[in-house]
Length: 213
Length: 213
DNA sequence: ATTCATCTCACACTATTGTGTGAGAGAGTA
DNA sequence: TACTCTCTCACACAATAGTGTGAGATGAAT
Image (cartoon, rainbow over all chains, first blue to last red; front, side):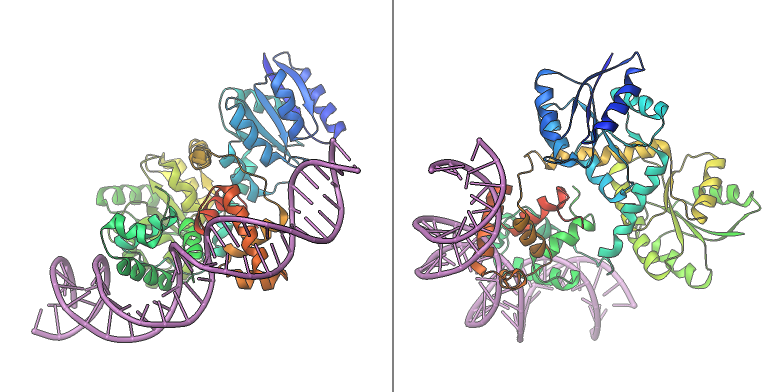
């Protein structure tokens, strides 16, 4: 028996989905919520295995809700439910801990199967949305018009320490060089990466995957 | 006739794949390269539709090659080819402009079909890798141990302008408030987000998806 | 009606960053 | 050998960032 919690701010849709889910003997709807805050309230007394969550809700939206739920109930599987196919948000949702992503107009079968898959720990994402997601990733290069320059090892060292919020002095201590040297490396990085300060540098570094370690 | 360019630093594999591809009448191998630099050389004289690219190569690796090729030949479809299933790099590859991602031990059919799909502009990713990719996205939350605090609208305004490398003075001008006000917002953001400077703030903001607009 | 959150601003400092310029040492390469 | 790249450091200065403290105005919520 998989315990399911529904969250959506549209009552009609809430009831419709509930009806669909209850038609399956393996599923039990333990509650319904109209926003994220209610979800957290309900979870206190009614543990659920799978949370069907609308993306757009008042008070506390889907994204914020995911973070809270995952923090307090890490084992709950979260399936996002949405009408639109806004690809750009999908990656963010997964990063935050979502287990899957379904369209609201999914068929009854897809919906039920999705919940069961999620319950078993599988990632749920319709093929159509997979393509969307990849596109949203590859669309980004708007922010990388410039070619990634050659960054030397030492510059990379400095870059990563900057990313860790160290000051120039601290970086110098860490690398056993003078602050002047560190300053020079930063200066060179600014020119190479075509930015004006550390903030811009770290942004590009993240976009370029320089900090993924 | 789809023109294919192969790039891999292993000669044996290069020849093996070549043999497979040439068995299909719809494909033509226009060249083979041992590293990224060679790829760029070959493309100058032998235009290709699809580039089959190994991830690990000497001289100029796959990722760097993608960027260069996409810059000079935006229409070339790039299919990554790799043995390992290192999920974390997949997203970076797509961001850089890769069209798809195939395992080297893919069957002959998958390989050929993948090339044809890519040629038609479809995104190619084996279902197995889709799951990998999603996992790599959701694994990240290592970096978000803290709960995302409530950021006010005004703070978000300031945050985003900081991300655009504006100085406090410029932000103040942009928002028609005094620099003191901007400084206060920053101060409050630092405390809320538990960071010590703008660099750390922008990093978290990116992780939290605060800048995806 | 009072509390609370948000946004606003001031003033006075200190700390850090970023810039301009010049230069030497060592490794590797043409 | 001459050249290029990388890493190193100095010195001086201007520009920004960041901190500590206090406070008024507004609007929404209880």
